[in-house]
Length: 504
Image 1 (cartoon, rainbow, N blue to C red):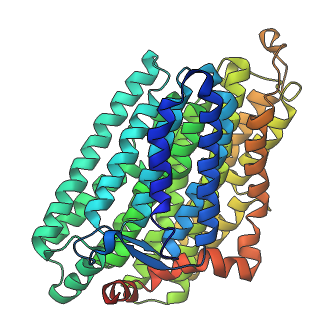
Image 2: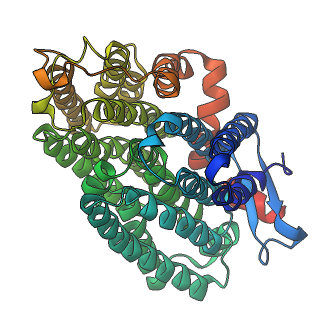
């Protein structure tokens, strides 16, 4: 599986530089090429599931060259990026007709995908930073793609806070290199196991937590997200919430804490605190929102709290040398919810984009009765709403159930109770969405509203089917052992992974 690894970065990167040339009458070619690229990346991601491997660019030895590493955790993230980018790109075919310069949009979109894939596959922390910047800069431009006052203001705020996060990460990289003499994750891990943690490494880890916490929009680092997500075009909102904050934030935090620095009780409690605060504050801020996309943005903060809580709880059990079974269960719940959230939150943002495009508004109080005019959009939105609220048998129910069971079995009853309460408040919030957007009386100014069909509906239907089908990842042992369990094993058995890479 060595050969295809560079393709995850090279294919979208090359296409991103070709697409801006396809102007005028070549715009349909640009649209076709962009969709072919995302479908190719999805096919490669499916091929990578269950595989492991490394790739040294230019056949340079590990400490000197760019080292790409594929394992269970990175293949899980590649799969999420592949699914969501393919759906968002398909949705963009029709949705982006209301904007100008579609080839430039496709170029920025694929640059962002290339950066995320690079982050997920990177085996050293400096190239991880480089790929992170590629994805971040592209996302700054995409948030402000509309060029209106609201979009530009949100993009500027996102850029400023994103630059702060990048600076923190770069300072952390410099400190790690100064203390270990290496940038390769496996070698850094081996060095830390020999010399132990010192003040410099501990400070570097705190910088990483703050920097990647900003990228993940965890409370209290979430200030940029409620403005950026509503302002971006709907498919970009789906990408930001569905995969960007995971690939550039939560994934890197988990990778560094488990496989590089090693788990410890204080760091595990920090993760749990970030997770719980994000869950609670995010959901209660969402309840009071009347802007459709802003409501979804706050729920992104809340739902990422579930992921971080699961990872943090697993880290705490491992750090205390507790039962690895419950640690595995907690991490399984967190990673499964990461995958689930990528699907149902992307679907919600695409549905909100369809509604906004048809009605011209994002305000819930100005809508109503759209089930008559947009029955298919309503059906997909209802499926996604049930999924995020944890209603059985949709995928969100199973990941939340696993988190609750892990917390109860490990003796953290308060965390289990918080998880259930936040899920109930989430349900109330999305009942409000259904009530004000699709039910009730249709306003006179929306009587001519029409359903958005074609590629937009196809992308939403694809994700809606996944919200049901992904329950099989837990119910069928074969799928669970192929897709989810390898990612869990990477974190639970983190001590063996660095040694394998160094030996290679």
